[in-house]
Length: 287
Image (tube, rainbow, N blue to C red):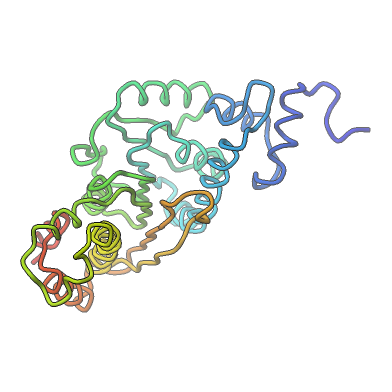
């Protein structure tokens, strides 16, 4: 007898076959319906190359975040995950479908400035029976969750300083875990263009080098800010360059309230660069 029930719909059987190589564990029919609603799968259960690439990226990120999220859910049953700048909320829905939902406790809140996307995501969550998943329409900088707490904060491809807003959000909500995949860092490059001469300014004299160095320096500063705030930080690739050029994952877990050594290193680097990006306001608040 076939491993697929004779009563199983052809589109579900097709989806289970194409997902077998990428989906962790067995593919539930409910997961197939979710992926179709997200337009990752076609109506007949197919998966085109672009959708396959996107799905592999998000699933890999889910697996990278899973150990931290599993630990939070085990430690605190009422764990709250805040997914910021959700867009169509691929990450949020897969985190819920694969981790939060099966755990039987914990909740996930998506935040996005676009009310239409929030409305659609809320409707999809309801249709899927994801009763511990909700969405808020608002900017990252202006949103505060009820109770003022979030245990894990994620921000996938939050553009330019929106990633800094995500860090501020995480600090305001006393997040234990912060996961960031930055995108399009332009602020520091712009500041360097008008900066006074510095001992190391040859690193960014040419516009192309300034863009690249500025993006790199931005993420170095972000990691140091998190370390100075008491987080243990790991920076790694979350996917291969063949899938996305925006593949730097900053994963931070809070172990203490502050780190004086990291603060000194941060101050030294800022002095050498000769510029002060806006994110440093979080350090001024604890000076």
